[in-house]
Amino acid sequence: MSAAHVSSDDIRDQFSKAMSAMYQQEVPQYSALLSLVAAVNEEVLAASPALRETLAANNALERLDVERHGAIRVGTPEELALLRRMFAVMGMLPVGYYDLAPAGVPVHSTAFRPVDDAALSRNPFRIFTSLLRLELIEDTELRQQAREILDARRIVTPQAEALIETFERQGGLTADQAAQFVDQALETFRWHDQATVDLVTYQRLQQEHRLIADVVCFKGPHINHLTPRTLDIDEVQRRMPQVGIDPKAIIEGPPRRRCPILLRQTSFKALEEPIAFADAAQGHHTARFGEIEQRGIALTHTGRALYDRLLGEAKQAAEAENPAHQARLAAVFEAFPDDEATLRREGLAFFHYHAIPGAQVAAPVDVGDVERLLAQGALTATPMTYEDFLPVSAAGIFQSNLGDNGQSGYAQDANQQQFEQALGVPVTDEVALYAKRQQASLDQALAQLTGNGGA
Ligand code: OOG
Ligand code: NI
Image (cartoon, rainbow, N blue to C red; front, side, top):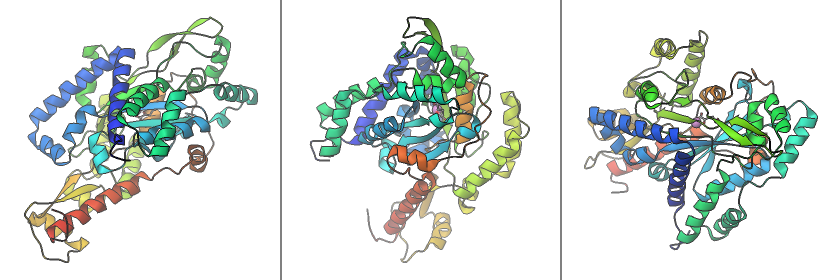
């Protein structure tokens, strides 16, 4: 990138705002949800100066209002590879692999998102991106037809594609090019109330799996939800009906805790929308919905294994109603430490380390001294936010919008290698990324304390 170029962080910021504006127009309930989330966040911060301080210390306060994720679904490896190049313009790289097939959703997925501290605190916009696994359609004729329909569409405008090439060639975009890119990229994710197929084809694909019809029958991968981040998901869930929004029954993920971990999510049901089919028949399609999320601390492999085990235990006696479900989760999660010091000492979660300005210690300092330096008040540790997704929760979100004719589960194995081949690059391992950021913050803090670098 040269001085004449806009940073990818700026382009992502513009794009996420443009996407939000478009979705607010397309789905008015999303506007109502944004207002509700903003009101609740304001109340939480007013009631908890300590939380405000922690967020501020983590550079996380400014990002709260712009924070959201979206989700799309693509049909072919070529589409996935092209979108990977589009998201790269905005500093969004593929992180993590999620296999949804065991949960009866014929896709596998990644999240395109910024990866470094500065980019994340500027605007952490992420897009959960799923690739349809056409090979899971058993009817070979239908599979072939779906592939042909997908091959005939072009999901990125020629102007956007040219600008992606310009970005790759120049290593950046000028302000004018960036503005044009944002406009053109938005087109890929717009809703179309006209299907590209006739009603009978739609119905056959729908019968195979509703998600397959959603991916195959439209001009492009419409954004299917946008999700603001709340500081109190239980409160937003409780108030949703008051603003005319009908939430799904259960909040996915861990229970409410003093130290929130990972990610809690809930959504409102997809809208039934009128569609004109290619044979001029009229019909309906349900695809687009809204979601909210509350993010907590990122977990290490050890922490994640404990989370997965406890979630599995809680699910053995699944509760249909949210209060009973939450009570059961809370009981089972008593086994998960709920204070920052224990989460850190037991290596369950990731933290950012900072040197206290003015504190000095004698070099050399080794890792074993970290607890002592924290106790002495020379170092602080603040929770590192989980930036990714959870496959079990994602399956719950998918399913709440697929109605009752969902599959119970596909037998095929996860196939990360096949996904990466389609993508054109390997996905970044999310846990390795947190570990790297934690280590970098510790190295920098220790260097500051021992006078070996930095201000
Ligand atoms: C994606 C569902 C997953 C999440 O937040 O876990 C997701 C989809 O429905 O396409 O967005
Ligand atoms: Ni989502």
